Image (cartoon, rainbow, N blue to C red; front, top):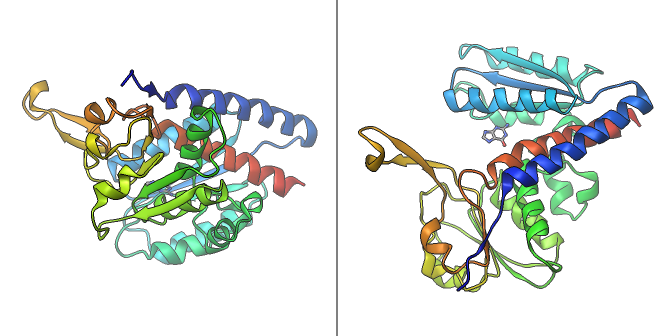
Length: 295
Ligand code: GUN
């Protein structure tokens, strides 16, 4: 096999963000208003703090109005609901993101359902889930990670996706299910595999497109990959790396990259593949939400 195409998520995300920056500037010229994004973080999860900081920075860099609400872990559900209600009514805020996970005493699904669907830039509200599933993607706000994965596929594959065999590994509401809906809308033949799938290697070997989103380090082995397949690795897992010194760690995906790269036609690295696309698509959703709200 020749060397696979390494899908450069960082470069593609940068080009998406540049385009959004230009479109946001046009919105300002036309309406005098900037897209506004509010990100809400409850508690002190270190990984969430990094994500929220990056989202805030990206929004500023795109020329958005960006507001960060950092609340203590002791915040009650009623207080969080009151903040969401305030943001729903704030005309300067077009997108609201409540960072997950929330502390155990708060019911995430109750809070997410109270976000106005047209401000739901995560695409987690049942109205947006329903629109995507019903094939009305153009009216929905689509979850950022699968939307970004689709952009990577479209920029990598030379032809249309229609008719290709796509296997999505993982059935989460955040990635697996919306990814399957997006691929179905592209007329792929879609299989959703999961922890109870029988003979997962045989299912994956059928695929022209593999999207791995299970959260298990290097679970997808190289010999599961049909030669020439395009592999999108959504996993971000931290594992021990004793070769780098005592206590050192490194990030790996859900795909055994060194094995898979010998067979794949194109593959995303971890880090630097899907990860940067998620924030770029959050910016895209915020701009879309602002455009719709500003008429
Ligand atoms: N935590 C991990 N991923 C996400 C995401 O895409 N959106 C939100 N709101 N929280 C997350």
